[in-house]
Image 1: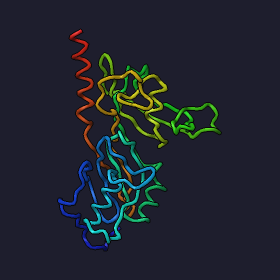
Image 2: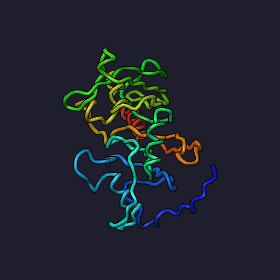
Image 3: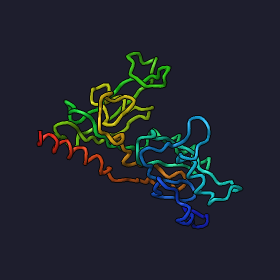
Image 4: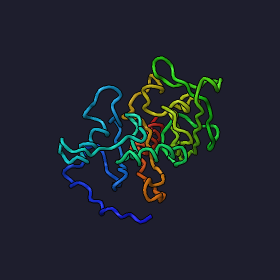
Length: 244
């Protein structure tokens, strides 16, 4: 499809938000890398320390009268880092959300222990309790199907580094699935080990996202590096064991 619109020009560097790295931008989409510790969007009242707020400020170039805005397509948990895509038009938002299940989402995680099967798919039905926490149920009518593909990339005496293919996108899906297998994600304060010490952050990262562009229909892939902290975890655990 030939784009007849004017060439896109991104706002000057001085408007780029802190804590959010812009990977790509055009008339229809805005792809960023979110840092751990920042919300995608607030759950109650508007908050300035969210990716959604910061990107709206960015596209408006500091002009409070501007009608430009971004639209949330999906979310990452506050403590999960990685690739996020926002739409810049309602048409783009609807397209991306309608096609979302068919897009490829790859995550990386450091978990406790060593999965018995080094590659596989975890399948369950996830439900939410009154405290808004997720858990698996045996009755399909009481939960939503959740499928998590994974492959072990590296192991040491304490942890495993996993590459994860998110086959469905349920709330807290990865964290719940591995917690229920007794391989809790390192640094998980909600579903993880209560006596865990020394974890600086949740060791979960949305490493890459492949989607079809809403206007050109071109397949696009955006990838980021595995956080150095993940490799430090595996290295430090080896060193700790060697010194025991």
